[in-house]
Image (cartoon, rainbow over all chains, first blue to last red; front, side, top):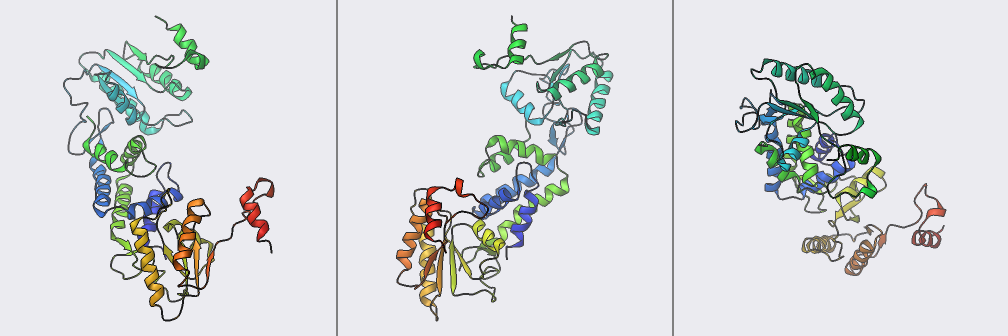
Length: 198
Length: 198
């Protein structure tokens, strides 16, 4: 009764995060109401993602026919400071803030249990080797993970693992966010903010 | 810095309903983390929607190389009862409930102002002509719009328009939903439920 194209679309798209069968169904019918040129644009912008690969250095994304990503191949960026991030979207936030001109390293989404996945362990192993092979020592390793219990747990783990290789390992400071109010600050943020007053 | 494929994806997908730039960004990176075969499946299931068209009779969807949709061409369904629905997803809900074996007519999403769009007016005009041209008179026209103020307003309008053409025009009854509790019923539902007691 329902065109199989609609069924296939729902099957495929309801597997995406934060999209159940109901949302996928609505999306399917919305898509069919679009101009065919726009639908084609959506299709090809989705298909174009297949041309992307992970950068072998920082594990961000790059074109499959390029050897490294745009950031790793940028000679204007300091190569002796590396910021470890959890997700690609964290990198976008960093870049949008424009505060950092070193290199990144994407660890991959942390599991809720706090245990590193095999892929994440192998990424960290790769980072270790990169740092070991450097001619000049790494100046600073910035652990820029979320200030959550899992983020902290992982940061401790990384600090232990890399302690012998890098002299300076730092973490992002915590405190009251700009524009935030002391009245509504949580205890941990206020304590940290007070402790690091300057 | 960010691959243009990601940017294009975000631009295209953030135009979809209930998807802002932030969700589209997350979706883009999620997509790139998928197996390329799955990504290809998503792409082609999206592309396949371009092969769909509106049925010229009921305005549901059909393959572009078929003359009518699966429901309109189904000879086992009564053709002398037509249910007017707002959306394609309402049709799916009707079909899933398995309560109706007649034909449908999709009016299209009602605007919040309650004014019919040109496309909706022309669909209704088409329905009028279909009913007029019939050899045998239509047995029943069921107005199955949402029991909201806009739905009711539109139903009144349709009743007026089709009053001279169809003898029996009905609407879905309202009342307390199955499994619902009287204690929590709203006044209008309880009143309607009481009035139509049997």
